[in-house]
Length: 199
Length: 199
Image (cartoon, rainbow over all chains, first blue to last red; front, top):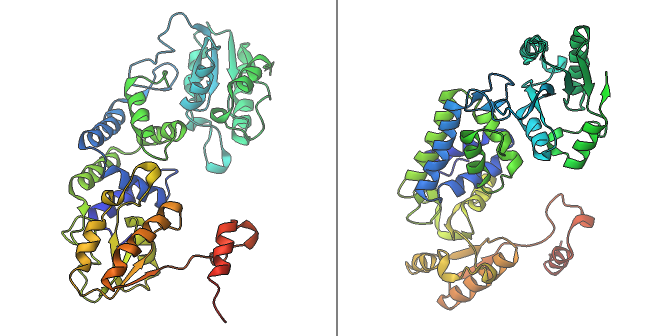
């Protein structure tokens, strides 16, 4: 990367440091960026800074939002007695896209992973438990990924909630093992929802 | 993408508009960006703006640079009588990485493509011809890609230069080193056969 001069190298390095962008894609992106109209470039950088400054976790469900509570949590027509627990906002998005789930969510912002050193205290589990203490929750649907981490997290949460008497379900294994929710088609997602079993 | 609030949606949209970044990668990138330390985010956006404002074409060879002439053109120890013609800066970079080419370059910033409506006047061909008029050039090595567009461009350039008496060569086309014959397309196989050399 030595033959561009400094400013181009710096851009390529910054881009290549982002996840999923290798050295070659970074070069291609940089190339594109310096040819984009200046106002488009400014719109992109403004969007990045604006999101970084203002997007935070929903006070209720811990998804990403720039309001105090996210559109789902602040929607009174949703069923606030049913909580679907997902690993991240993209998984929540996957179920929202089906348009068929009318409850609310709880976004863990991660999954328990002993291998990566992520324990129950590193995800939004305490916050889920305190939501359940309100007494108004009828069912918790665990929709973590069906990966090792997701299953571990599901088991852990179900054991934690069971004593409280709240119904705990797990989405069915219509989701292929090892699959990541965000990559799965809507029909499979819905089938998994319909086939959920009590834990 | 409706369930994030505005600022997050806007960021995802801006990112998804970049080449090679789909809706899903844009979501993942946005997610990463809003969790990055603020100073890292600022370094990225500064790098984008700085490059967009200051990177332009080298006065000599039309590669991307932020100096008046690029490091290669301004290097007196390079052989300025041999010009390698490439389609873009990344191709130039590929040859620079070998460390074995000591001549200079001419970056066309594209290739002739009737299908995309890109003609000889849309790439830096006039600029190449005026470099040749200096009379000090011994050889032009055409290293455009071996795609339809690259080959068309190579043919066009060679016909354009031939009358001037300057030596015009084309990089060899054939089976890549380490390539497995069974995975290589027929055209390449035939070209490798045509271009066979005596051992």
